[in-house]
Length: 149
Image (tube, rainbow, N blue to C red; front, side, top):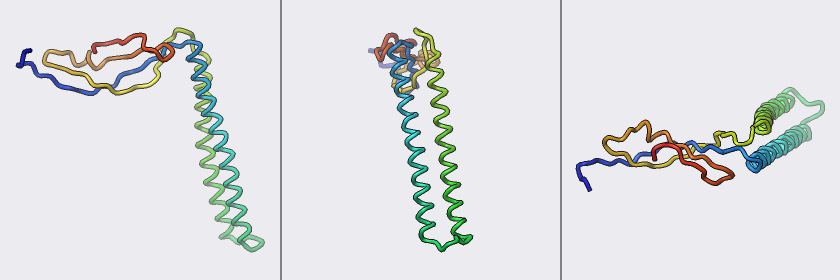
């Protein structure tokens, strides 16, 4: 071993791509649908909690409610509406993603996620090439590793 060479261990981002298959499409669509269903449940729960909080305030206050009580009710309604708006925005994004997945063609490559990995470099290595690594999956199985590992 040549002791004069210096080695260094570095971390890099590794792009993981998936090849679109019927199984992949089905799994991704199921995942997205599950997330949409969870958001629907959160929206229902939010409505119920908001109504419960408003009812509790109304029961504790004199009739007709004074300006302070009405302000509390209005504040709760504003908070509920803001949270509802966030959840509906998330749901809309998931629905768009679901539509995009349905339009993907089989055998097309799509970015699935990024992970980190370690690699060794030494004097004379091309760092740019070493940083550009991709892993390609077909139904969860590594089909190809691209780049200078």
